[in-house]
Image 1 (cartoon, rainbow over the protein chains, first blue to last red):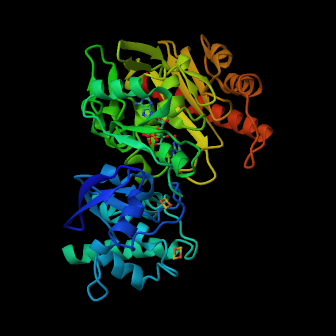
Image 2 (image 1 turned 90 degrees about the vertical axis):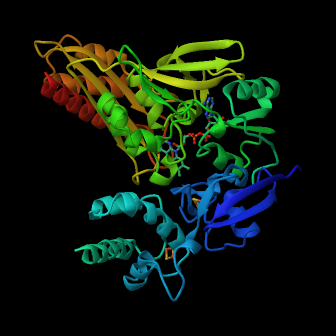
Image 3 (image 1 turned 135 degrees about the vertical axis):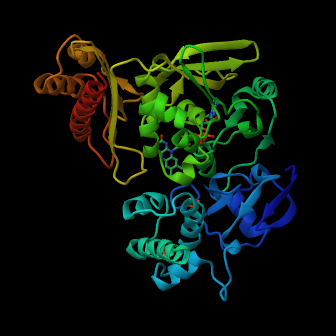
Length: 160
Length: 293
Ligand SMILES: Cc1cc2nc3c(=O)[nH]c(=O)nc-3n(C[C@H](O)[C@H](O)[C@H](O)COP(=O)(O)OP(=O)(O)OC[C@H]3O[C@@H](n4cnc5c(N)ncnc54)[C@H](O)[C@@H]3O)c2cc1C
Ligand code: FES
Ligand code: FES
């Protein structure tokens, strides 16, 4: 099968690889680039575990082809923080017990990052709307909503 | 789950895309947002030999107001772009208020208006709205273009007027008439899921407050967007009081839809939903039109 040469900017780094056209973006990120923080749950767009940022917007990486990312900018959960220096969202998830097994967490975080920029002071209903496309089988969601509120409260305190 | 192998083409111009489509015919599939196509390829329910990616084609992502107040929307305009557009909010309120019912934000960031209309899922919102608003679809092939009304575009389950060599390039919505109210209601098990049933109503009142024109279109209670023209005729020319609205919604649900049952909802339940949602939609559209009068 013919391979196509693509270059992507991912988490600030340039990567150039040969890919088969049928390679899903989620598999490219995980298998070819070794960034296994992006999870794959359903591969048909339902669970949200594979959410990444494509040119700054949250998208399902299982519903895109790697070749479509040629020349584009991607961000995955690895771009957020490190265990010693967590991103405020990660810190809030940690403190509010917003994860148990953690399988869904990267998708939630990448969904929330751009959304909170556009919606800095959301109410409960808006938070639940924004997260409607991400499934979590462990937490029951309440603690995830709490974590989002914690992030926005923290932010308000620092800007007050 | 992986798609079967295919050849990938990403043309820059519409002409190139049309040529590729003409050359490859039945074996080719157009890729727009991929939010319906990639899942069926992942399941290998579709195994196209050639993918023609429209995402790099220029000129398909404009929203324009034409001189006569019509709104033209390019086929590759993303659902999320429509949702955020002030122009759509003010000029096409029904379209604006329906977008949040489509899937989830991440899916609307990729999914396009043209992809949804061409895909022709009877449970999809955009086909219903385009029939309700009497949109025209521009279909282009190598030899030219034609305009097809939304209502005649949908022919059978997942079957449309689109020829094998045609691309839907533009959707044209007529200017909003005066004294007109709109409403859309649906019921889904979980917000963002495909709905079990839904109803769109467009009501225009005359100066005396009587119904001058009505359109009632139903979602997911038939193979295509179901137009209840007899119920709409019952409303036209009359004051829209409670008993008339109820009778029209009843007639539509009993005689003008063809719901099939599925694991989530029996046909009888869908008829019930269509009645309730249709009634609500007519009420709300009437009230909105009264407020504008
Ligand atoms: C989890 C999930 C939930 C969803 N829920 C909903 C929902 O509640 N309501 C809803 O309406 N939709 C829903 N969708 C579908 C979504 O709205 C899709 O975006 C839409 O159906 C297809 O648009 P697309 O741009 O992604 O098209 P694609 O998937 O790229 O294409 C769909 C089909 O249309 C053809 N096509 C695309 N563009 C053109 C064109 N310009 N001319 C001719 N043919 C073309 C393609 O060849 C393909 O056959 C959901 C999807 C997912 C994954
Ligand atoms: S793996 Fe992509 S949405 Fe589930
Ligand atoms: S924490 Fe286990 S799925 Fe969400």
